[in-house]
Image (cartoon, rainbow, N blue to C red):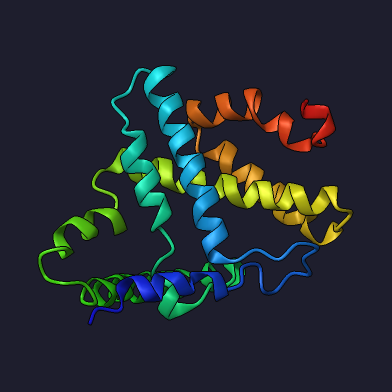
Length: 190
C-alpha cells in the first residue's frame, strides 16, 4: 500500500496566510491549482508571445506539485521562512528532504516520473513556476483588499514589487492583459 496520493489529498487541510486575518481562507490545494493554471498561462505567453521553448504542460505540472512538501512541513509564513539566510537555507533543506520522503511513498517504478513532477527540470520552468506562485499570492492579496481587508495592503505591495523585480516579459504581458479583469464583478465580465 502506497500513501503518496492519500497524503496529497490532505493538502486541502493546510491553511495558507496563517498569520493574517483572511476574509476568505485559502488552503494549499487551492493555491496549487491557481498556481498551476497561472504557470500554464505564463508558459503559453512565454512560448507564443516571447518566442521561447517553454512547455506549458511541464510548467503546470510542476506548479501543481510545487508546495507538496508542505504536507510534512505545513505552510511556513513568508516572514518566518525568509527571516534570515540561515533559516531560508535550512527550510530549503527540509523541503528537499520532504520531497524525497514523498517520492519514497510511491512504487519504485513511478518515482522517476513523479520526481519530474515534483521538481522543475530546467531553470526556465522553475522561473515560470516561481513567478506563477508569486502571482497567485498577489491575486490573493488583491482579493482580500477588494473585500475591504486592509491586512493585506503591505503584502499586496510586496508581492507586486517582487513580480516587477523578476523583469519577466511574461508577467508584464499578464499584468497588462489579464490582471485588470480580476477586479471586475461577475456581471462586469459578461
